[in-house]
Length: 287
Length: 153
Image 1 (cartoon, rainbow over the protein chains, first blue to last red):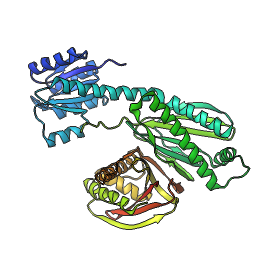
Image 2 (spheres, chains in turn cyan, brown; image 1 turned 135 degrees about the vertical axis):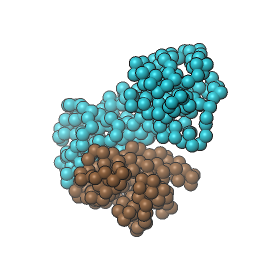
Image 3 (cartoon, rainbow over the protein chains, first blue to last red; image 1 turned 120 degrees about the vertical axis):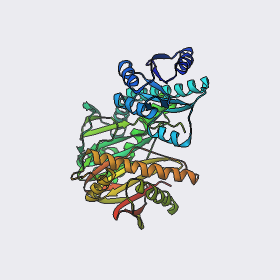
Image 4 (tube, chains in turn purple, orange; image 1 turned 180 degrees about the vertical axis):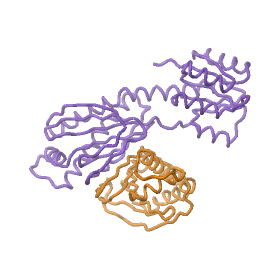
């Protein structure tokens, strides 16, 4: 578990002390405070907090300018607005600035602590997912492959990059939806697809339609099993899988998504198989 | 497949596109397609789970995709479908589908959407899970965008 380090931004020293008191009484660590844009930049750069509480009215600047400055330093830093102003327009704008929570002054200590705990919980859940998901998907693929084709696979090189890549011939995409959303992608040549399908169906020759159907089901089983294991690790994931979409064609280029994914190449008796999985941090649901 | 499931997508298109700088929005044909569709161009796929399960497949011709990305990026010229324009198009389908999801929830149907996957190529066969897909063609500044909706029963 990572320690939560908090910076308080407010132009009133009374408010800073008040917020600090609430946070520290609840075992949270305050690493700094700021009252102007320059101070915000300085203290955030120096302390690299997990979270910043942000007042909206500040001398010579405003909360949004400070939030943008924080985002430029490190976009993973979470921001909670604590302001006496709270109307639809400002809340909408805060949402656009990816603010994690909005709390109106006078501060209700319970409300503030609940909001912070919620943010920490989501952050920890995402960390857990990042640590575990690829191992679990690889296991699910290995296991599913072994049970359905009665052969083994060996994992070769593993990488996470953000380059476009060319499909070997057939791609299966499965959308994953839960507390975070993502996708699983399997890619192999049409030849591998036919051989794999024929092993799964235990018959000499398979038609293209049969291959497509059986491999779609195969991908569905692999992703479904992996998501069940993740859900067992922490039921807050709540992952479910969408039905598979199968593509095949000439020179299909698959573009990388906006979030990090991991890829592994597997060697099978039928040929090369590519597994790619990734999850997005997801939007905060505070309204 | 229920034809009324198309309406949230039409609504979201007419709401979202003008916000991105496309003023003229038109509605084209609605058709029923089989399980497999063949395309050359840009294909973006999103998964759906919840009260309905399925996939939404967006299709845009390559040249049209560049025009849309260019408009979304304040008229910046797009000669090649680079990373930035691919990201813009993915984000577009994300917004369109998320908006449609909100309309579904107003209809009492709760759905969640997955992240989009973008591909492009020649002569690509796309096979969806349901036996039929509803296909609606919509136009933004006369640029056609096809939305295929394949929901499982």
